[in-house]
Image (cartoon, rainbow, N blue to C red):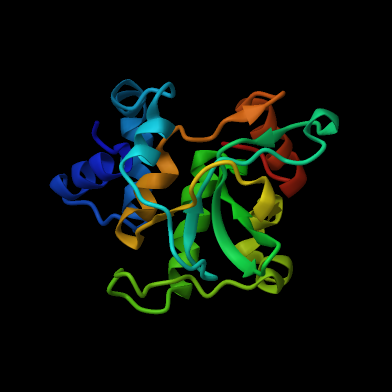
Length: 202
């Protein structure tokens, strides 16, 4: 069972695209229908999890995915069952960070390209992290898209292994349909995000 993130990363490399660069945004927009056919929503998440092991130590600045069932979920308006999170704060009780699934793909890609200015190195290896602070999202317009993504996840409500997305696979992970919003459609949630940001999708 092939891992969709690895598959898409390899596809981008074969087409001469940087796997974490702005030029991939336009490629994605032109290829979106083909990607939907190649990586359908059903089964994509399970394939990603099947091919990866449990992460060891959690680190700020890494990108993680896991299955999450929040406490009091019946009272929540909506939530994402499989968040894709850049960790900005970690302790013994929770992971706090930015769940990129709350952004429409266009804004997600632009936001992530801006985050590439904050990497600890340019080699995109196992030591690469994103030096992002919550205060930067709050105070700097360049990172304003992250304001609708801020979430806190209690460790005791995680219902799967926590998997780490490698830096070379970051950009590919943005494009795959791994979000699973409960009680609201992703179109409705992305509309809420655009409204909160005071922007309209062009």
